[in-house]
Length: 97
Length: 89
Image (cartoon, rainbow over all chains, first blue to last red; front, side):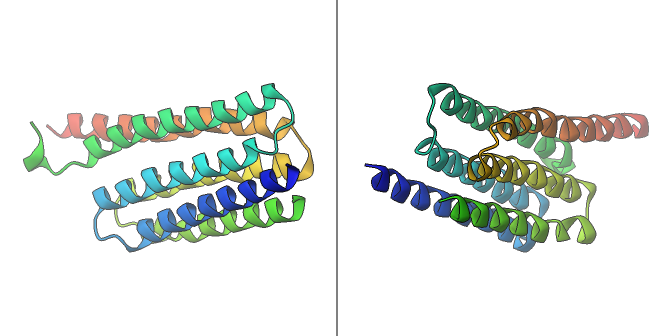
């Protein structure tokens, strides 16, 4: 059973690291600020979620697992709010309603 | 398992460091704040990985605080942009 959990951890953490790489490449390569924002916030928080998921398989107590999930939820909430705020701040004037 | 998690933490930190090139290149302030946002998310991921790899549960609490505070950087940025555009009009 431990081996199964270890394999799941390796898979999820690898997938998470891949999404972090994707987010960084998007931030460096995408042509304008709004698409960079899109690449960054979505890919990174998916990566964080997958890493947290991978670590959940290693958590020995329920409290530790809940705290890890709390970290991820807080990250998601912060990213969603901040993305909207930044996008509104850098929106071209012609698109403003 | 600890070695793998340490390697993963190092990899995430390396991608974050690569993303910081955006702070140098800009061009806008918003792009720079986005790279700082990336540093926040990547820092949280590296901290939870290190907590598990080294058996330091307190690092998860540090990650929790970082998740809470990283958002305020961008909020302060947006606030200052809003203020400067309000001054101009």
